[in-house]
Length: 287
Image (cartoon, rainbow, N blue to C red; front, side, top):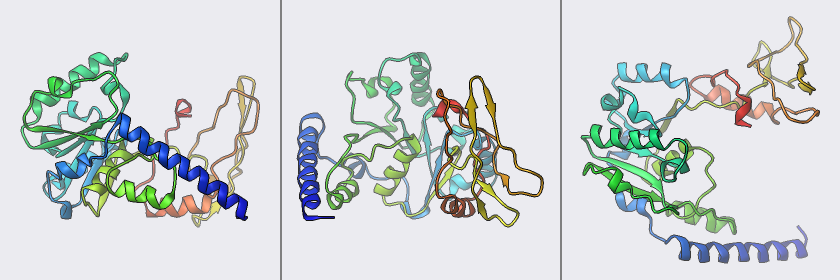
């Protein structure tokens, strides 16, 4: 970077950092509620986070058969309390981050039923993590009149500024990295509580959709799929050539070529380290 670019970056980071602290002072505060509440279990046991993905239907019975809930601390998210196995796993941590859980929405009846289920079923100490951001002043305690449930807020104001200060804030439970999923919030909470080992189940995605490998599991550049009008034309691989891991295409609203994810070698290495393959279903509505 040139001297002028460094100066511009310094001025921009200074402004963004000052703006962040001003917004936090007005809208939120600087308390680390997660650290104050502390863990309900033992961080040395490790954490198991149960996601919403369809693969949990296969993973959860195995976890219960191995009685992992006796050796690990569990975290659940969203509507898992409505499952009959909720009282078997007895998660000590629960995360709700979607706005529908504290704002009026089309799912208000289902959300109301979830709070009623949590209030009725939870007979063990459990931390419920919710967003600090609550513009409509939703009363969690009124919806959850259960003394076993401790409501813990996490900050949601996104930080932009100096990178060194960013990590300092994250380690103290301040600021947000604009988490895209509730599982990422759960990971952040688990790290703040001191968990060193975190296992994820039911976390399905389409990140590797279209990634091609050959018989030796070597990455291969995937074909590009085109959408022309209402019909989709795909480049199919011939017999004996590298095959796609998943059968799904990116459908867009414009007539243009949609490239697949870059750096397939890096994605492939990540796949080898995973305990299982992602769910092969592809849903265009997630785009």
